[in-house]
Structures are given as C-alpha cells and as structure tokens.
Amino acid sequence: MAKVKSKYVCQNCGYETAGYLGKCPECGSWGSFVEEIDAPSAKSENEILDSNPPMKLSQIEMNSEIRLSTNISEFDRVLGGGIVQGSLILIAGDPGIGKSTILLQTSGELCNAGKKVLYVSAEESASQVKLRAERLGVKSDNLYIYPQTNLELIKKNIEALKPDLVIVDSIQAIYTSQIQSSAGSVSQIRECCNSLMGTAKSENISIIVIGHVTKEGNIAGPKVLEHMVDTVIQFEGDKYKTYRILRSIKNRFGNTSEVGIFEMGAKGLKEVLNPSQLFLKEYSQTQTPGSTIIVTNEGTRPLLVEIQALVGTTPYPAPRRVANGVDTGRVLQILAVLEKRIGLNLSKQDVYVNVIGGIDVDEPAADLGIALAIVTCVRDVVFDLSTAIVGELGLSGEIRAVNHIEKRITEAQKLGFKRIIIPDANDVQEKFEGIEVIKIRRILEAITKGITK
Figure 1 (cartoon, helix red, strand yellow):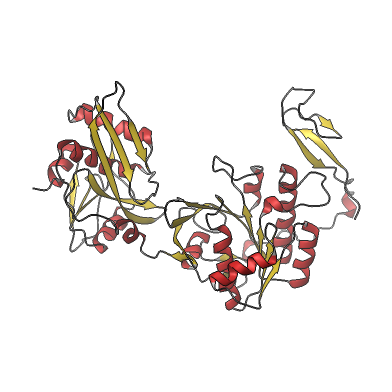
Figure 2 (tube, helix red, strand yellow):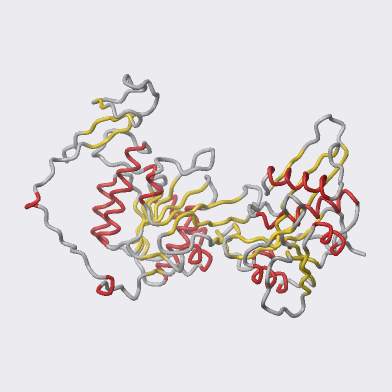
C-alpha cells in the first residue's frame, strides 16, 4: 500500500512544512506542529453520489435489538441500558484501575449470550490475555483474541469476522501506515479513531476503545478524540481501596449523570448493588465526636457516606486546613460561616475533614454534614448516630434546598436511620413511615436538633 503524502501544520499560525519542527519559524511556538494527511483532489458535483438521501423522522426504522446488554447491571446503567449497536465507546482510567479487566469480563458475558467478540490486544500477547481470562473465569469459543497494532490489519479482520463487539486495547498503541509518525502521537490517535468510527457506523459494529490518561488524569491525546466517540466513560478509583467507580462523562444514547460501582477482587470486578452499605460497613457504632452521616448523590443514585472531622490546637502561626474527598475551598467557606454566624473561633485550630471510604463528594449538599462534624468535634459532643444529614450551607448561615430529596430520604430509611435533617425550603410531598423528617432553616437549628442528649 502506497503511503499517503502528509505535511506538518502549526496549530497556532497555520505554517506548513514537509518535516516536523520543534519550534515554528513563523510564530515561535514550541511543539505546535501536527501531522496532517494531504486530501486527494475533490470530485466534481456530478461525480458525487448520495447513497443516503434525507429521510423523515417517522420513516426511519430501528432495530428491535438496538442495544446489547452486557449482563453487568452497573455497566449497563452507565451506558444507558447497554451497548448501542454501531457506537464507538471510549473508556479511560489510571493504569491498573481495571479497564482491561471489566472489558474482558464483559466479553465473556456477551459470548455466553451467543455474541461474537473480537478482542484486539495491542499491548499484550495472546498468552497474556488468556492468562487473565483464566483468572477471571472467561471461557468461550466466541471470543477471538487478536494481538495486533496495525490499523489496516485490524479493519481487515473486523470485516472478515463480522463480530458483534470489537474491543481495542488501547487506542494509543494502534497506528496506521498512512502516517509516518509513531503510535500514540496526536495525528495517529486522531486518524485511527476516525477510521474506527467509520467502520463502526458502516458495518453496524459496536467498538470499545481503551484510552490512556495523563498524570493530571485527563484523557491522553487530542481533545477531538472525545468529540469523535459516542460515549466517554471514566474509570475512577483509589489504589488504597478496593472499590471502583465507572462514570459517564459523555453519552449520546443515555444519561451522563449515572455511575456504576464495583469492588475489585481476586477474580475481577464485582458489582456493588448496595453502595451505601459498602461505605458504611466500617461505621463505628461507638459515639464519637466529629462524625456525621450525609446523603450525597452520585449521578441520580443516593449514597450514604460518613464524614469525619478532627479539630486541634496548632503550635504554628498559620493553622492547617486539610480536606480529603471534599473541595478544600468549600471547607474554608464553611469554616468562615461557622466563625461568623455561630461564633466558633477556629483561628488557632488545625482542621482536618475526611470522607470515609475514599469517595469524592462534589455537591454542596454535603455542606451541612461537614459543618456539623466540625462543630461536634470542637465542642466534644456526639451527633445522633441514627440521624442522616443533607443540606447546602449559605453564607448567612441559612440552609438551602437540594435536589432529589425524596430519593435521599428513601435511601436513609432503607438503611435503618430514624431521622433525617433536610432544608426547610425543600417541599416534600411524599409521606415517609419509619423515619422522622426534620426541616431546618439555620445552622443553629441543626446543631440543637442533632446533638445527642
């Protein structure tokens, strides 16, 4: 196959050159040259044939089996109900987080359902993939392992096998012979992904590609990679914890607010169907100051997690403020409200706030729980262990409304909590049995109603 002519173009000023340059002679920028393929001459209008004329929405027919169920409910939840046929999905995450593991498990489930899967391993040999498959208990004659990095050969085998699902591990290791740069470069990633997208749409084959991440946690490669694909899924987790969170960042066929939670074990990833129990299983039943239970939302799913605070006198002129699992800026704002509105002097106190279990809580509905954990630790009193908390703390000390309040109350009720403190601004229509709903307007009300007598 003859190589297509290419050129290098500066992304800042558009300067073109035949070879790569570290510094642009036109604008002086460094590392701005990207390889581009010279497009062939355009056809005349008479030579262009449109095989897909415009159609009315009512005339478009849909296949009854438009989605493939992975038989892994947490994965299906994030995908919006399953893998859409003809879609291109990107899964990214830190090294060793479990990307290859979950896709190999998914391959096994689909093969057991009679589907044909092609697993393209660009970073491991076939024997290495089989070794992992045996550990995970994946055995099927419908699973084809293909260790290959050349895009043209991969597409040739896709056309020959006609699989229901193709997994490419990973997109950064794939290269096309039409571009001279090495695999993993911006131009290679862009062209390979664009070619795989064309194959997925034309052959109506679902393709999942694995993507690397940078040290900052962003998906490696050009940003256009995320624009090309139909779905972007981020695999998150803490290397010191066993649980993993599958989060949808972009989904053209489903809700982007859904998350799936898994637990990593010796035999792969196991679904966590009741995540609140997971995060509360180490919750001490001993009455301890500085500990509260909040009801947070991961997507549309309510979770109960424990917040702990530790406050102590500092020997240094500048006290420390350390937050794990919550935004440090949010904690500083809560401390300012506590000092101004209830007269809590923390100017000479170190403050540590931690979310138990390693989960990150981003929503402001956790403000009230953080504030009460700090207050109980400072005053050395215990917050009622059977009371859950939810509410956003305003700068004037008021408690503001939060979303999905009925779901939060129901989740607390299911886990045996007797009371829940919510903002007075939330209008709760449903009547709940077995749990007392306490509405408050100010931070002082929460303190007086939540402290154990």
